Length: 286
Image (cartoon, rainbow, N blue to C red; front, top):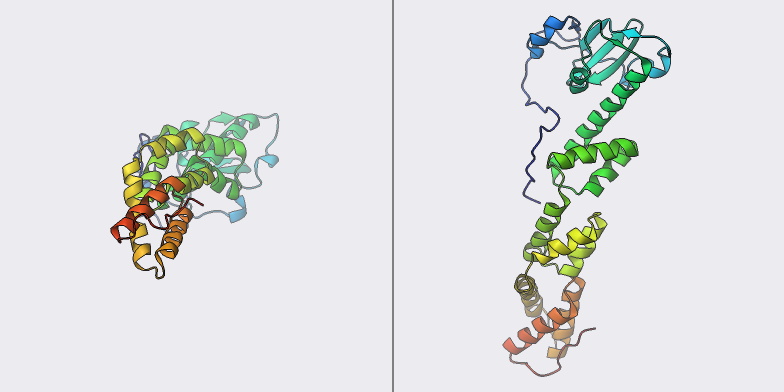
């Protein structure tokens, strides 16, 4: 689909490329002091820790003590992946997205319990699931069902999927009603598909029955008939044989494309009349 749905929100603080690191590769920049928040973040970069530590940092939250208050000892920007930070609590550490770090005010000296860190890790999972969804949507518009299926394939929990879909919907980046209407118009007018075909496609994409019928209602009978005539005329011209055979083959062709029997009868009758065969061997709805 060629047209994107407009969004109302900020899609995950996405930034344009081309930023230039002022620090040498591999260097970790300490931003623990609150004064750093006023500095240009583009000045900092760092090497990424081991890939096994990506989700929750070294050792994961399982290594964190249960009944202690943990003070942040340092906050370091990682070079890759972008906008992720290593939060250290002495011998313990975890990684979070920049948005999550800012939301929970994770600066040097801030104190958290393990239960609070579990909430932070959950928020970070939603942020990363959101980033996966944005990448999926960047290729073409999708339905909420399709995005949920994709996130499931990526291993995100049902709770994370629901939160991501809710956020995308609130931001206008997911809109099943607009998707269905655009899809219906494009498939009928541009691709020569009947409403029966389109209804089946939208069901497979997880669009609700109500939204499907509303979308099909935006395509007029005249538009569907004109599309059927256009494609049937091409089939008619390239079909050899007796008039009866041409009617049968053209009618079957339209039925396979999802046009209703009554519309097919009307199209075949008109083609036959235009060809001088009206009234004979009328094509019947199979």
